[in-house]
Image (cartoon, rainbow, N blue to C red; front, top):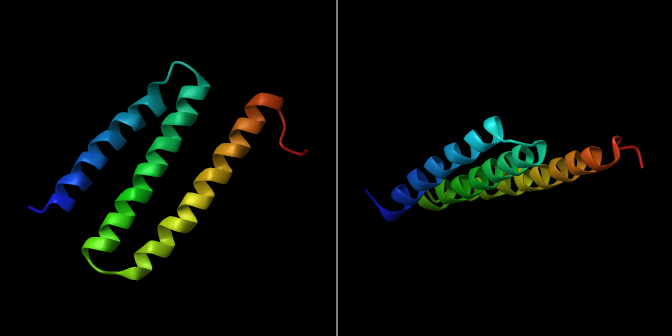
Length: 87
């Protein structure tokens, strides 16, 4: 087992911990942070898989996923703060 496989397994384990926080979070903000952490860890796992298997196309997918993750967290935060997103 290579160091990259170990790192991927560690990231998956911590991703499940963040998913637990997203499901059982005491507040809505904890849930949003948990979902953002799961998205970030997914991006890192996809980049590592692309590096291990020498597939450069796997670097485009996490970039798009990172952009969507960032925009969705901004929209959710704006909605929670103001109650609407239209401004």
